[in-house]
Image (cartoon, rainbow, N blue to C red):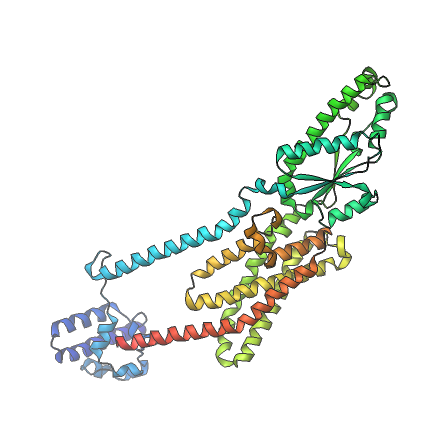
Length: 524
């Protein structure tokens, strides 16, 4: 039968059934009013009477074959178990009266809503302050901890008549003490066999943050130039002292330390220049007028400090790879749970528990394997150099580090998601914020220069991923054995906890479902 005519018959049928029920009811007028209003408002597509999820489904063929009976006041029986429910009661449960927000009927609901909102805001405020404080705290008062930065002075200009080396030691030590910032420690050049390479190796091995190396011929070259300025018109004092450091080891540290280093270099230049002018004026073998005429730089800058950045971060892309990219790595690791969970839910009721657990673990690891490849290919596409430490194998090692790193944080996120969804789903968003901040705060700045609280970073995955990537990309100190061990420990713990989280999630969801069904039965 055509749609409009069918809906007309259906409305008439509903009204007829209501009239029949009304003749048996003590409140005939009320029953007729409700029945008439429902017959006018609802149609077959929109009415809840025809929605199977509510338990009320009429067979259209039955309605078509018995329309005459409907008009005679005979009721058409539903095809579901809800047919046992009297028509009037069924309509009473479906009809809901709407109230204004300030209606007295909603008083208890309003109180409950306000309490829930207030409680949620308090909880969110506590979580915001607690979690974000971890990140803010890693930046707070960083200058206070710069006294933990130790720099070496290796004086190879240690002859009895040396002038530059002893002067640099005296001036730099006095400056460091007065500034109350980084400290300097004098080392014997013989400990390094008077070899620049040996000093570099110690710096790269993180034995110190940086080293001032004073050339063995610094005093000799300066005295020659002062005595014969005409022969040293192109004299360059920057080769007398160099500062060797690996910027890539702790980029944030050297950015913070840069003002101190500049001030120290300028203080030494000015102080030593005044000493050179005074000495040249008192020494008969030196002429201030000749020096000013042929090599005036000997009086203004007799010695300067050359910056030897052994591991520079010259490519701006390194910031994306080593910092912001790692935040995205954490977030991407959680995506596979959101994408694959509907698929997992369709298989869960049909599989043995042990097989389901194994299936979930393997699919997650494979997902991280593929996702980490796409993540790594971005750096390769933008021509990041992976060959410095491991040659052509560098990219593969970079990918594998990203894979296990993503597996470690993704496994933790998946376990927490299973528990949160079964208990209090709103917490899941705050968990992601916590996971990002707790990993990032100790990873992007040296833990040695942070409050003791941040030492937990040594045991967190992203800090170890970051250190391992520094070795691959910049050839810094190789701590990959320790880094990979920590990451695998996270994977192992997540794997052990996963079956428990699956069981807990299933148990709680089933319990909630049973409670909801029991509550629905009580209302009937």
